[in-house]
Length: 449
Image (cartoon, rainbow, N blue to C red; front, side):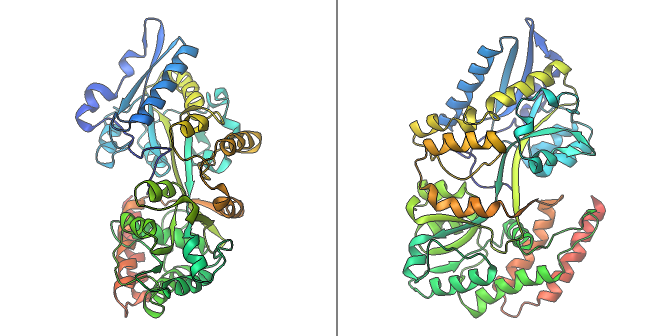
């Protein structure tokens, strides 16, 4: 699954709809015009996201001014990738010349034969060597490069410093293990007046998503390394569910209302009634701007458990119909728009600050080495949120293994949703049976994929 926000101001960014797919999304029949190389790109912010749309169009215009031989044609709609239309466009060969994908799409797109092999060209992408190797590797299949990462997020623990202090806990020392999460949640819930110590999702596939993240944090995995067998019926899987069960039923630290989804949990946190929940950094501005929270009270810690954290994100792939000139033009566009530290649509922190957008959140952390240092320096210089609240997240993430979501993620999450919801709604839920049953169902999904 994706994280909830997108960038500084709005989460609403789009892709062509199915109704427009044949007439406007594909563009390969007009790769050059008036001596220019023409490329279509998607994920332009919709007009409803006025600030983001303005930034995006400004950056496209500046790119075209610097590259007068390239004509960029953006396509917008909502969202960037619509699961209802993505496969239809892909199968019909109607993707844009440069098209947006989630990390979990990569192998599927490659398997359909619709992606261009960028390996001969990627050396021309100036920023490529500065990008995190783990993120670059997501778009590398069988030794060939098929895409370029643009953003990445990783899960952590958002917590309310004010509630920690009221419960007699040190707000500068968030829990680092699941045992500590349980203990701290119990003390926070003891404050009473409807206060919840720890909340988790358990519906709309979001429970399966969080189960996966928590399983990773314990050192486990959802599927085997070869992708053929489920690996949820393990000591690590049992530990995740037992911990949730004990917090819910023994400690009464998760509240009585369950089957929560992200909006429910964000509302609790924004109203000051929740101590902790798992999320990516982009939740923080939503909690403030939409749910009534305060930046000074909201802090972010690394994923408890110390083993790994779930990462997600997005990037761009190229149509197999692209000409070499279009591929080169697309790579130059990506460098300009997204991959130059401290500049472009995602990195122009001064512009974001001037437009009252939050600057200083700890992600996306896309670069390494000198490029990362430059990006962080510019971000810090323009920060308008309490960056010290996120330092433990930044420090702790350096020690964690970054693990992407499994293939067939949504189908698997649907299965695991039932497991998590059962544990949180039935005191006598049989964890052994639930995991054994889920394992069989996931094996069936993997066998069909």
